[in-house]
Image 1: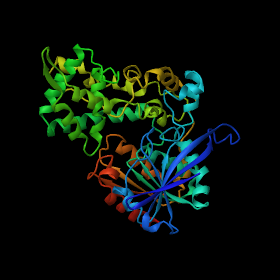
Image 2: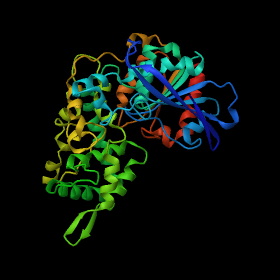
Image 3: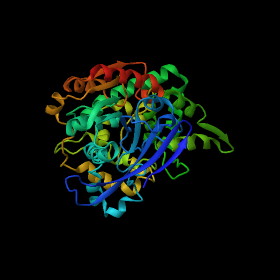
Image 4: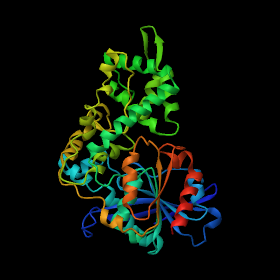
Length: 433
């Protein structure tokens, strides 16, 4: 059953699909997928080509926008757009602390979650394409992890693609998670340095907050334990276009004077909670490192192990000397499953995933080398989330891929520069087609 309704300038249609949990067992267990069809209100009866949008993540549902903002408005000039909630996210059989116990214990939950990576998402797309397009290939736009999925799509089912557009999401084809994080921590350090250069007053503010957390037990309103490591992880925003400003505004009003002396303000704690909680996207924390796993090596809490190789990120050592407190970036750690009430019931499940040794390949280098699909990729210079060197090495591997390398935008350029970014990339697609 579908339901259509209107917003300013667009007609939206809710669409639901049933797909196998394991695509190699089509007669086995099924899950539900949800997607929102969007078409310009003046084009509802036109026979338009389809554009499938794959959100970044993993673990985030598709954007819930109103009307036709940013890149979506540009896409609607020539496409009918399908915004897919990838399996486990949004309305697509969500996976989190409330639903995963239906699978059984931690071992069963971990086994279930192995089916929520890029290869399964691609096969979901192919399973619904015939119903959506009548069998015609579609153009796919992948942001960040969505670009990882597009690269898998080009490997597994290129016949389903009329063209492929990747923004900030060209993955390494063979890097282990350890390689990813060894490349990431120096990038994060540069971003933190750039933040302190812009807002030098924040260096002392961050040290003061960290010192407070090292000497006090602080619990956020939702029960999240705000450790100093959790505070440092707020640096994840520094890879976005407005992230440095958001972090600055968070830090500037961190303390308030009370009858008992200065303490962290309710306003700071509330904002930190919104930024730290995984209640809305638990799948991100659960499977984040597994999106890099492709062989018999376990991920084994890669970010936590690799972080130990970079002692400058140790808060206590920084405060004991004159070094600035370094924030961290996009990484998942075991302590998150102790601090965050949305993740605590899943800590054994996360541990079981970190120990797995039966990961399957996500990409096919030989097929990518023979690619015939027009494909373009925006590669953001010094992207904090996806290593630029890894992306460019992959770009040279995919036959015919054209890159647009830019330092005008950060990783979320499709959001901050939407129409301009998409217009540039679609022009490259047309040149390549």
